[in-house]
Amino acid sequence: MKFKPANKIQDLQYFGEFGGVNPSISDSSTYTFLSAKTMFDTFEGNADGCYLYSRHTSPSNLYLGEALAEMEGTQTATVTASGMGAITPVLLQLCSAGDHVVSSRTIYGGTYAFLKNFTPKLNIQTTFVDITKLDVVEAAIAENTKVLYCETVSNPLLEVADIEGLAALAKKHNLTLVVDNTFSPLSVSPAQLGADVVIHSLTKFINGSSDTVGGVICGTQEFIDNLRNVNDGACMLLGSTMDSLRASSVLKNLRTLHIRIQQHSKNAMYLAKKFEADGLKTVYPGLASHPSHELFSSMLNEEYGFGGMLTIDVGSLDKANELMELMQHKNLGYLAVSLGFYKTLFSAPGTSTSSEIPEDEQAEMGLTDGLIRFSIGLDNDIERTYQIMTECMRAVGVLELVS
Ligand code: PLP
Image (cartoon, rainbow, N blue to C red):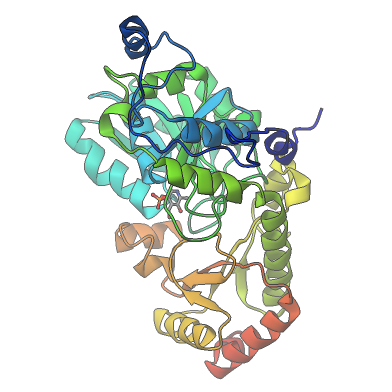
């Protein structure tokens, strides 16, 4: 049967302790035990249903984690204080000194910086590869490789990873395939395609209101238990715990994710088609011209579309800045990093979210100065948005330049 992620979220019901339609918020950092023995058992990880201390877990965090595990179809999940607070403990749990990671080279700048600059201090080395070429990925795998790391749709170039192909490689070489699915929640379900661990920055589409940072790690019960282990669990010991109040607000926002993603996708598809027809260099996985359009289509949970992210290249950073400032002035969106907001957000990744990547490497991976990354908002009247965007593009000479 087809995997239906939104149905799985919808079917989860939680009530508050007085019959509230939302679950009660666990407003405590620590929990009492009726017997000292149960407290001991809980420390040992053997007392199901008991709570110990909220850095370990809390009822509110478990509710949100369970809903996200349902969404990704994994056994369970644990929520974290940010997306980076999910990514870094996963990598540190899976790798020890002397181990090796094979990672896509087009990933979020913070993840890139962690693997490039931070983990080498712990003698964990990474080879960055073009993730769209499975032969190149396989050639980079060495005897000490432990992790294959990628984003389903990469930040910011919107390259698409062949999750099934990568999962087969991971299986063959006994690696853990870790997939950051931040750009494509609901649209793609990596664990259903063979990923071992699925991560999200909840900060983006899933929360959707740009009022918090948050993250989640979805995986097997065994892996999540390991992360939470009081003796050597990276989540427990590094302490990137989500606050219960936040977990409860993210859960409420998750309830409308399916509607939001459909609208983000609809609007992004409309604009991408128009921009391309106008002669702008446009990258959107929903366009037939996208090099991985067929692949993405084959992985898609169709009803959610190709997502809200698109890029255009306007030739130079000066032009990009001029256009973004004007679009903001016309109230079309905000010149801001991040994504998944109700309002359109735009930024030039080369000088913002990917600035951690050295210029020569940016050039090699095709990250140009004039690239603008759009997170398309929930605009009700996208035709009007397009008309005003076109006026802005003409005013700064972007459309004349390309036509
Ligand atoms: N993964 C992706 C694809 C991102 O775009 C980001 C942030 O921009 C992160 C992870 C990090 O998430 P956070 O900012 O919540 O730590």
